[in-house]
Image: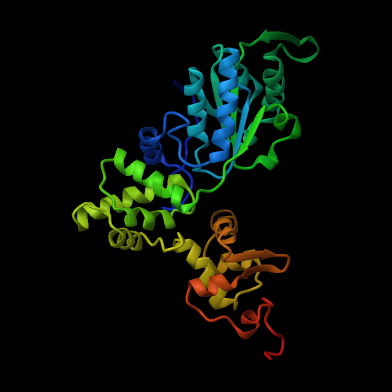
Length: 356
């Protein structure tokens, strides 16, 4: 396995953040399943991918190019490694931001072995010249290397061995159609159900040699925001609490107490999430309120509220984005134990102008 990721992943500031820090990367390497049978969740994707890989092996050919889309932490990198393992091929890992020039991509492609899997994370962030070179490489297994500059520049065709590109993206809509069309298999990774996360937690606890009861796994799964990476991170923090404050066994009460210390509530909301909801409800009566105004009230940057907090709040049905601004839903009032104004309670979502 070749590791060629030259980008530094910033450490997440939130325990429930989906981005992996260096500790996560080290632990995930030990916890990752090695084949499709061991991979938990994503049933449709696994079934479809299994057919693609079995057929390729039967033909003695390389597998079709694969595009995996979905939120961070759902298993895109893990699936890429499984694809390589199932095909008995080495894997090379890099990322879109690491490829700034077409020459960077040409250097990677020209060094691939036959049948090798190239995993390109955040493929939508690749530079446009490299992207255009990738079109030909994926379709014809060939690239044109430009030698010289200006009128005297010459394109030298370079033949490539057959390889499988696995692209991963959190924003599939940013990929140009010519690039999307060159993938033979496209899959969207869905968020996990609590029951699936419980299986992930039990498997990880077994590998980490942590004793956990069924209700303890249920408690952690319910706060993991549908994401295995977050579930494993919460498991490690609860393990630490259980070792220091208890007998090392994770029960429901221990898990709840541990996650209360880390300010992760029963629905997986952390300090930032609750701060946004509290400002929206207590200061602005549930909205509508503009994003910039809401961000100032919370004491965070506009981008932080919009890109870090809001996606989960919207997905949980606690906040709605409207043309007039952000609006809290009845579920948000109920979650924070607050009583909505009469207009909100009546269901029209707006304050009455004359208070009647």
